[in-house]
Length: 157
Image (tube, rainbow, N blue to C red; front, side, top):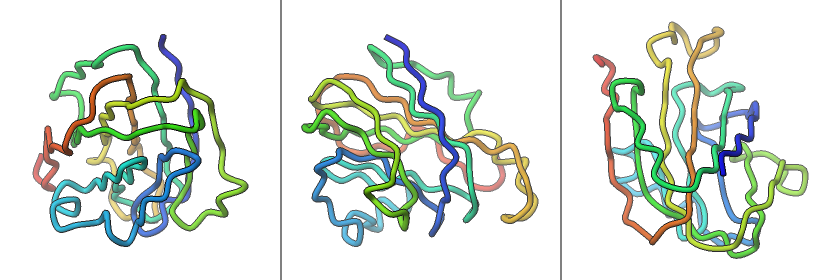
């Protein structure tokens, strides 16, 4: 399986949401100091990858069968964790988007490992200007894991 879902999402508050349709995660509490340091917040059934622009940004959700083993040299920032999708529906949206209108796609219910990556960060000159930044979330079936920063973008990378 290799299925890509592409979206343009308003990254209000410098983030977007990928969640189970029935998620009850409280987004006010999953942004812990550790999540802020990783620029990605994980709940039980939702992940909120951070962005570096507070505008419409390109997002891809890539469903794969196993760990995609992305070479770290090709990305600017990477965070791994897991979420549960019990409803079989994944919702992708900006954090202030109207939930009933947010796009959805179907997956087999279960626990999914997640790798959230940022690319093209160096192309950002000013937040509101066009840039080549891209945010990709890879998801594959796997056991639950604690969030882990894999590669940290610090502004000098």
